[in-house]
Length: 233
Image 1 (cartoon, helix red, strand yellow):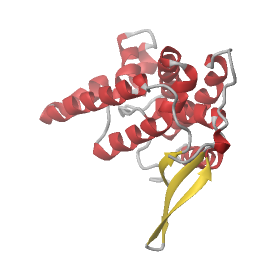
Image 2: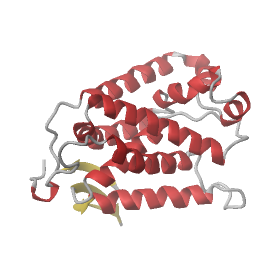
Image 3: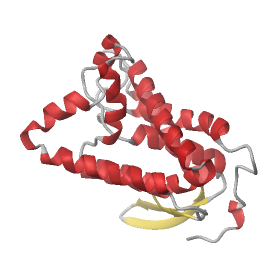
C-alpha cells in the first residue's frame, strides 16, 4: 500500500519538515558524489551497533546516531522516506509547533537507534536512513489524527485501486507489519526473511512517537482537528 494524500490541511507552513527533506537530499547528493569512497563514508557515519555498544553513547561514535539519520542506501530508500515525511510531517509539525517538532523528530530518531542497537548489539553492519525518526512522525499522526482519511494505492492481480482508509487502519497495519517483520529477524527465525531492513528501528520510532507526542503537544487548545469533516486535498 502506498499513501497518496490525506484530508488534513495544515494551518501553518511546514518549515522544519521541508528543511529536513532538503537536508536529506543534500546529504544524499554528497553521498553519491563520494564514488569509490562511499562504502568507507557510510561505515564511518552510519550507525554501527557493535561500535556504539562498545564505545558508549557519549563517545564520538554517539554522533553517528544523528549522522545516520541523514544517510540513505539508494534512490528508492530516500524517495520513500521523504514521501512519508512530506505526507505526514506537515500535520504533526502544525500541531507541535516548529521547535517542538524538531525536538520530537530527533528524539524519535534517538529512540529508534537505541531500539535497533538493543536487538542487534553485536552487529557490525552500518545502518542508515531517516525511517526511524519518520516512524515517530507516523506514531504521532496515529495519535493526533486517527480518523483522518488516507487515499491509498492498493494493487493486486495486475490491477490497482485508490481507496480511502482511516489513518488508524493504515498506520496500524503498517506498524503490525514492522513488528512481525522484526520478530522474523530475531535469532531462530526464518533465514533471509528480513531483507536487510532495520525493522526494530521502525518499531521503536513509532512507539516513541506515540509516547512523546502526548508530552510535547501544546497545552493550549485541543490536540486534534475535526478531521472527519475536512475535504480531501
